[in-house]
Amino acid sequence: MRTLFDKIWDRHVVQKVNDGPTQLYIDRLYCHEVTSPQAFAGLRERGLQCFRPKQIYCMPDHNTPTHDQDKPIEEPISRKQVATLEQNAKDFGLSYYGMMNPKNGIIHVVGPELGLTLPGYTIVCGDSHTSTHGAFGAVAFGIGTSEVEMVLASQCVLQPKPKTMRITINGKLKPMVTAKDVALYIISKMTTGGATGYFVEYAGEAIRGLSMEGRMTVCNLSIEMGARGGMIAPDETTFEYVKGREFAPKGEAWDKALAYWKTLKSDDDAIFDKEIKFEAKDIDPRITYGTNPGMGMGIEDAIPTIDQISESGKISFQKSLEYMDFKPGEKLIGHKIDYVFLGSCTNGRIEDFRAFAKFVEGKKKCPEVTAWIVPGSWKVDRQIREEGLDKVLEAAGFEIRQPGCSACLAMNDDKIPAGKYAVSTSNRNFQGRQGPGSRTILAGPLVAAAAAITGKITNPADIK
Image (cartoon, rainbow, N blue to C red):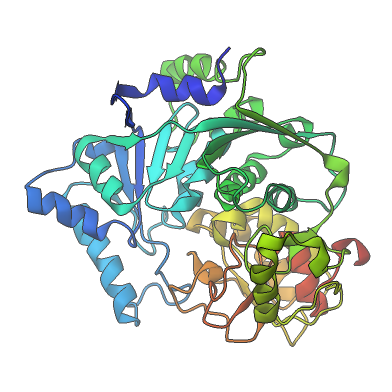
């Protein structure tokens, strides 16, 4: 009667604190440059080394520029953070993949690519979108800097055990509906706090039909509805993706691992603390209209009117629309946009670039649109070029930038100017998230591609 989450969690319990948290063993710690400096400083102050350095992987991604990575970073804070991570990795004997390294990229893209992310693992990183790795049937979640220090020192973390929730999407997705649309639909229905305190398992025909890239997109956005993490039970799609990757088990170790992975599913009689069901037929291509990922709608729909908003949410709703310069009841189809961003740990994988390139093939980018096309890793960049997607994109007027978090957040050069509208495939549309005064409309790769071609919010189904 156990859920998938319970099976993995219970297997990793070191000890339980009476009336307190659980000491949980961690299989993999990912470190980037933003949330790790104080953690390493804490080890130095206490004269400690990393307990299991071979299970820790470091790479810069948030602060890395997406151009001229072979030159010193111009921005002083970014340059110092990246240099500090490199020095910390060296001092503590940790694997480090710096800028221009073929294994570098956004850490939540690279981990799965290299086979470092595996079913049944517990995975943490000082980044909320660590939930991405749950797509492999792993218990993966973001932690704070003090907890990063805890894992560096002990390979364990203290955590209260979350409650369990299963979200089932019945039926098949409609054409032009992507994994990103599924995730934005779920968040809009659940609200940004609807899964607070829960670890979510996604299930149902629509979820099973997703590629691993699509599953990572859905799990990536779990945190945006307040969940501690999200996960999907591993299956043949998972095993096929993992097999042969650099750090994946080989030979007899693979056979042994596979036998265990095939047990990683919720029992038929498992009881979840909460069950939610949605129908795939109700999901259309989506966009957001406000300043949190829950403020979303079908691309043809109208922004809610004030009387459709709960009393407690009316003030924030109005403030959000004022910031975005939208009106209650307004439709956004045809609204002019200025920027398009394809990338981030949400939609920076090869499948996203294939979909975008296929859509824009034979068409031309709107000259009034600035498009930032940013692979999630150097491996994705290589795949783009090996498959000839770069030629398709260049012919349509797009330029491919170098890998990094880019315009997902304003920690590098790629900032959206104040007052400008960006259709973004990233994960957050918070006020100023992509730059002071920037206005973010979250969408999937196909909606982003349609906007880049037309210069306005457009239903991709309307483009021939």
